[in-house]
Image 1 (cartoon, one colour):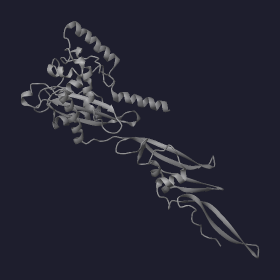
Image 2 (image 1 turned 135 degrees about the vertical axis):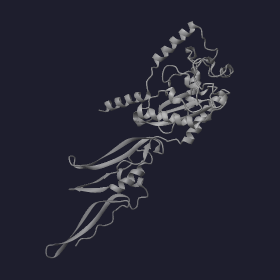
Image 3 (image 1 turned 135 degrees about the horizontal axis):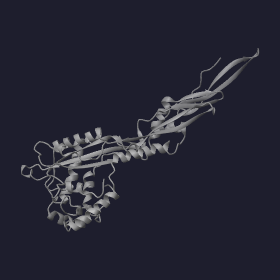
Image 4 (image 1 turned 90 degrees about the horizontal axis):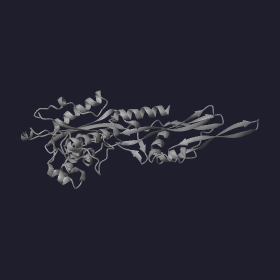
Length: 386
């Protein structure tokens, strides 16, 4: 006679269960044998984390919230392997769908790790061995066009208000034209940050030159909202004067070339603050090529043009030989950026000195495309891991 297995000694985790076997011993007596084995139960677990702790223990170092996820995955795949006198648990959670960072669950955007715990029998060691695996994940926020337009409008017009210049209005045609070019760069040029040719900026009722600003960067999480202000920060390196005059580039007290793509740059600032611009449109793409560490590479840009018929004869940005705004604006901003005035000199001797300085800055800060730079980083990391 043999009884059924008893209930597991625990309702959450692993315990023991027993069954009895009664057999004849000799002609006149019986023998009762008890058999025990390890058992599993999750019926009494209040959470996946409780089951995880019962199986794995405390497991310090795991991100907050991941034990709940992993515990529920262990529940679904765990089994007991009996090998001779030993028993052990085997399971494979697979990679979690959720990603976890140092502060817990990564939501719609951010960087984190997908986790996996595998435990299986190792015949060489005669025991079950477990390991934790992880896979990096970067989730890029896809900012809606409405939100992007709002961010770029406010960013540009905050700069223009500071300069007492009229605000810019959004133009969908310029935005669409900018997007078309950025998509071209992503598809055919691996998101190289190079300005569009002038023929690509010939649009209906916009016969005069259309100005253009470009930005590129590696991000984790949300699309940067400070693109216009990063362009405007070049004001600290600008000396009031005509576009094309090398003496307009100076190392003012607030000048930093850390994020300048090549040499010492001021053209992004003058495009944002160009007094004759009245309308603009912007776009961005998440590039097919990624940065090191799996971070998304972004390429963004804006195009500028006058909107009023009487201003069509006034080009809309960085026209050689023209000043971006009136002297009165420079005097107003001089209190914030003391290097703005006096105006950049134009005599031949000083122009030569300024040209030498410009070339020195280009040597110190050579032009390197971010997409290519990040590709080199990835190759170096791959080589180091081999």
